[in-house]
Image (cartoon, rainbow, N blue to C red):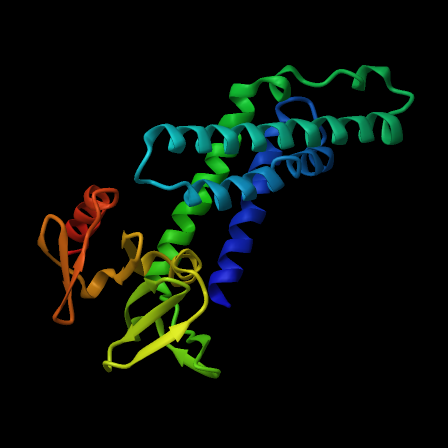
Length: 240
């Protein structure tokens, strides 16, 4: 609950500061506040989708995914800016023709991209800080062998994909089978876990890199594929 309140407070403050910035473009405060909402959906989309870009593997694919996301949020922002401007012109300032022109800065892609980047990066820093200060302790509930199982994240050591199933290995040595794909488990478990192989997802705090392509966790050796090798080495070194 605290995390949600802080994140909402951040976005409210971010929108207010954006409105103050837009006041320098000769908008009244309340109009600037509403115009600043043009940036909100795209900034939220950027905050959500950009971290999803695969950080390993094909560099060209990574660049293309990033470009597509940025172009998408930029188009969304410009569309909303022009929609808001049109609304204020036609509904509020219909008789004031001096309000017809859009401020040049709001049509500048560099300015718009800078505002979006600042808003999204601020959210990234806030979320990262909150994850450390308020670690998630809510259990994860899933189905294994037709029964409900609840495990805390810290009680899961690793997840292994086996054909159409994944096997979840718990700290107490128990194993659970589940039909949810390993990529979905990766999103579910979050930053405390790292993908080391197309078939393995491991808890960072319990993983020990015993060779450049092998991780040991609870006495079990897990392979590290070439695709993830550099990222795994970097993350495990910085986590120690």
